[in-house]
Length: 455
Image 1 (cartoon, helix red, strand yellow):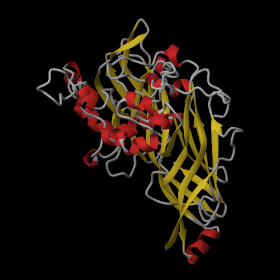
Image 2: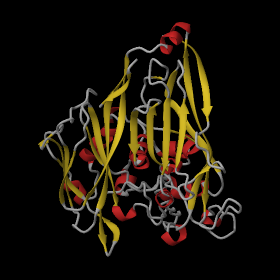
Image 3: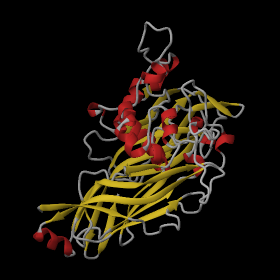
Image 4: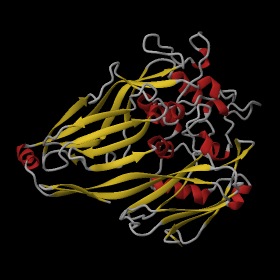
């Protein structure tokens, strides 16, 4: 099929609020976009959600908006409210649902922000977060800089990083294809998105009292994408119902809680071609909490008097298939480096490999600074450690994961459980949420009789 033109398209949502502002607090947490049936190919990687972000204090309203004033930059009294600096405005998206015009679900990514917190940090460097990713997504390698970004209305243009939209293959949206697409975005609660920041002295500016009642709005949103226009013969072919198939990757999410020092988590993935699985963690009380970053990716944490402030170091990890070690035949033992606060190399290499091939990784936020809080003093002749101003904030990019199949064919977990055993220093009274993300290959089949998806 020959491509003769590329159309750049921008569409508005089907369900616009009266003030063109989507807001969880104000009762408009869902936006829907319709890409119509037409004999063309959709470039999923070109899709962007565009709009204007407004971060409001608790006293703000449409008639008299009162925006964030981090660091009291505007002189009206500090209102310290900010986004997660590592994923920026993408933290506002809780769920992405892609479906055909015939209501066949193609992909659902739940807890999207938590997925991005790991995937984006593993594959983007400090320079990325402070340049090109900051421009499109309002990220920053230091949370103080991210806080200053949202002191006023600010435009954004973010990609939607789902498996289907990130694939290399264009998506046929004609009658000989999926017959159009519906993109539905569900917003996250304000208390999950807005969590404050830390200034350069290390002082936390994210007290729950300061943020309570604050809310965000996504205003004047649109969806843009590229359509590839085939020649006359290709147009005719895509206009007539026929039989075809499209293989694509899909991301799915599972949630659980771990609380014991020796825990085995079992999951029914229901996927026949499983490529990789990874997990990230967050103390359960930090979810939907104005006083915490709901998109942080710390190690497992122990609580004392209800306050999580102590790493529960992981000692050993095993990945299982039907109760047997797989695909690694040995358990990963990191007890010695964990005891000496050194890199958990084998664990971290497999985690990286579950998101992007370790051999091809060339950009990442992970370093001794983030993982072990071991900064490099960039001016050794100076008694003051100035690296805290020049290096990325030393919050961990932690997770565990494994690539199930290095050959990208996929492993069958359709009728067999996936399991992970975690031996750690958890004290039994500190529940930690476990966010599990599965990358698997699906097959979309279309015919004159309809559309079906095989996982």
